[in-house]
Image (cartoon, rainbow, N blue to C red; front, side, top):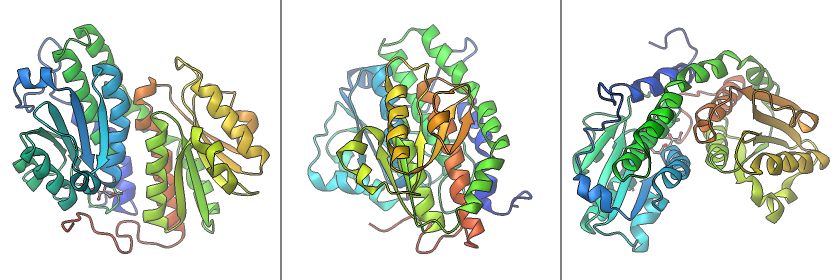
Length: 369
Ligand code: F6R
């Protein structure tokens, strides 16, 4: 049932074009308008929402952090992302005008479930983004938007992450349409871009040979750092989490802008650093700032492993390796940039002889607080 792959994780990484495509499927009407019938919360309530709080744990929380950038940009509503286990214990400001979005692959994570209960007690509406049908969180939520990633067997999450970002983006576009922040044709244009992503994810997978090779060479590495900015920041955190979980290697994800505020002290000769570079076609100067970061750490001896968009030649002089991904709109780029990081962790752990499907000390669903 591993479909010829060495591990479920490898298979699930390769399932990702389908996970995204299937999550997009059947969510528009004959006119191509986005309809999310599952969002069974009164339209008047959704129009009056003045804050969105995403609660989740681990990888699902990183998906929420990515979605924050898109939803705030599209809907002009403040979005907070909070780890479910922290949310409940800090007396959060949540009321009838708060939309709480609980993100969970399993739908059984106890921390997330308890946060859902707490939010509903405060009068908030709760929408769950969940992969597993018939699980507990959707039963307790006001509505559920299912991700269609298919069963995720490997303990570490991969395809669910891409599906969660996709579903959260559908929600963001739906709210933007409903609340009048975006015209129908703007929503359609972004949906078209989203529909183009599965092919691009496939291209990233097709090009992954080099990242596998490097991962095998790096099997003895003690520590890897990950830098990203804007939507690339949660991607960096997710890359680090995958490496910790699968390969038991110390790894940290940082916001690239934070480098000079501390983490740059960690850079010594030979330190491998992945850098997720934003598109040079982006509106502001983020690209050049991240390129400067690469230059700074390279000057201190870091081994720079760069993920950049096709055609981005500016990164080359400072990169020990460049993994190019197809061009995409900035907000959608995480669906591509994370893939080489997943492949890297999976391949490195496999090279170390570890069981990537069942890393030590971890369980697929964490049903205790
Ligand atoms: C990471 C991982 C965990 C889960 C987290 C939430 O690879 O698997 O961090 O993402 O435990 O689980 P769900 O999404 O089932 O609530």
